[in-house]
Image (cartoon, rainbow, N blue to C red; front, side, top):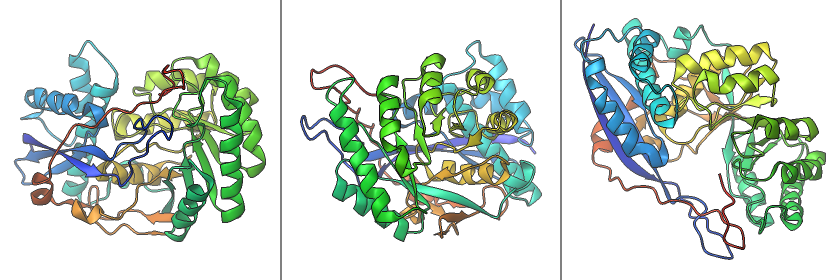
Length: 392
């Protein structure tokens, strides 16, 4: 079997959210997200699907994929790790979000081809599934108490195991104690509404000062959040260690890291309790499973990040099924998935079913996505009251 060519499809998917700063009107969450799907064709008539949805990076990733067409055509698609390593070896630059996302799209599509060719699901190729279903949580804004409680109750009713929101968004300056009080009150109200068996997770988007995150963690510990995600800016291992050592809430991190070597310092120092690689950015299944294996050695759990996209979601489910130290999976709403994919995914009792068909176990509605429009994602504005930058 040989690769004969590739096709890409980029399009915009409405999020149903247009969250803005109540003081300034600045955009905090995008009303749509950009998806980029990759199809790899073979001379055996088998095609595999991957995804390179890097949100604002979609045009760069798409250009990179087409630039690499000559490194793919004529190659055997059944050796995903060897083929993607060969591409990476040709490049003097070894990491980063564009290359990590482009190689992930290829790696996922090659696994899809192999699974279809051999008649087995991808989780079988990854060593076999370790569980019968995947525990999932949904995301929702938690700007005010009433909205947050309503969103949490809606997610519970829809079958999710928990809710993740973004606290401390209201902070007006770097050490804003009022933001801690407000976000803690929201967390407390959610816990009172949903009871003890529904998980609460908090994602600060890697933007607060470490000291603010520690104070926040102490304020919310009594409501037993499952984890506090990205409590400080990426780039300082010592800052992350400082939060992890002093936070009574388990700390999660890793969505902004890509190659295995980027994760190695966190692994060697056990700088957090939970790792969150995104299979769509960390070079695909091959690197994801390497990260998971090393995390298991350090008794760290895996709660994979999911930015966008139906193919990436399904790929994450296969990886989670085969990961011994898996904890929980970030999950979109399945409402509207039928526009893009033929699937049998069902969320019930806090879990989602694991795809069982060959390869990814889903079929892309190619004719439909080919007609969908694309528009670049607008950039968000996370600013303090004085106009200084506070986000990401």
